Length: 212
Image (cartoon, rainbow, N blue to C red; front, side):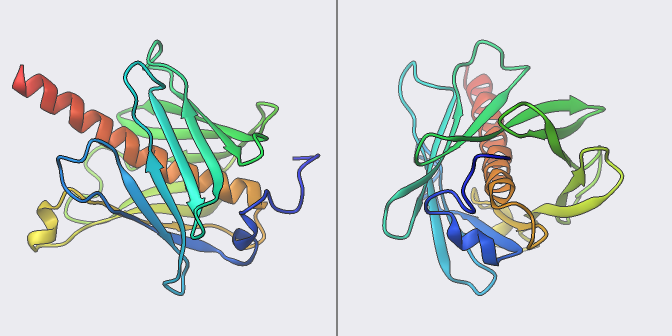
């Protein structure tokens, strides 16, 4: 990660934390784009994210801002031409590339490789296996590059047996080492957004197929 400052502009908050909570904030199922709030472990709102949707635009385009409305993080999947080989580009507000997130399907498990700007695999994110998470939280384990050590976890929080169970909004918790490089913390934020955006993309496709 040579060449980067201690923290990319606007992401200084991540230096002092070991986790975040992400809440989807769409106003209704009819809203055509996704919106999110990020909270610190103390419940303080620290970032907000909104999906950008344009006709014939990028497959995924999401911007993260701080509470003053300044852009701090950009997520981009340029096109839909290779939907089976999806790579998300993560950059900070200055345009500097922080890393890539490469989606892979392995034995019915949605997993990701976290790459630095040079393409070196730094972390692995392994999704829950087939049948895991029934009526419980879904855990995406954050592993070292060689898969030998778990260093964190991204959790899709189960809504419970209530009316919230049928809500269209999802909540996630993100946990990582406090001394993890701030750029990697930001990429794990992006990975959490990526997971939810891919789930929402699949929902839209299924709804479109059922209506056709």
